[in-house]
Image (tube, rainbow, N blue to C red; front, side, top):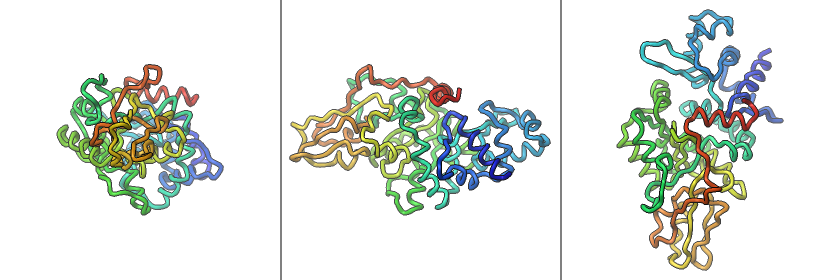
Length: 354
């Protein structure tokens, strides 16, 4: 009976936009058993993507309103469901997808077994064909790589995304934290995940992140450029987060990096361009590129456009100016949804879950 509950929860999560596909090994069920008690799994089956008060959920769960509220609040604190709080109103609860969602909400309570299971599950969870059609993240260039003459939309600049916010939280990067826990991490900055708007409330209330102002957020973006981190906001013009990612730890980048043509997977409006004639052969760009899109041949830079994701990291530190950033042709421009809600609707449609 207990195992059936977890199988039902796996199907329930798989019907959400982000998906939770089955595997032959059953690793997805192991993950759920680590995260949910049987009672929590049963209650989670009664939540949808529509935020509801505990009183509305209680009859479906066959629990009293008081017990339902108590359990939901505990699950929200554990990062298993999403809580929305508005002044003067009871909290509302809704289902949350596994990625981006439940997994990221466990940044402060990881263990080696959960990390091992996630490593096994990630190649199944991140389906290349689905990601190409409806990515949850997109890549935007670091600010110092954007030439003045290049026309850039506000949602294509991390600094503009930050300046549009009134509430911002910063949280540790779950990817770098879990890689460090298993001895495979790097020394790049840890506290770099920016959570914007209403999502910041959830992070702060749950102790997942801390409140910062715009000045500090902009400083973190500059630090990310210095550290060679790829900027990946949520795939919406009204972004709810900005991840600062490295190719050695980020689950998405590590998986995409294994593809022979990462550029075909990532949603990015830009691509780097190299002028080998002025290249000094210093090799700085090779160290900065997270997709191994650059190499030196006869002490001159050679750029593999099929591996370039347009992050601009090679451009911002090129001493000779041999690397620049250009906009892709109109036919290759990503269609960025206006809001995160539209992103999820598109993802659900692509996965046949709408």
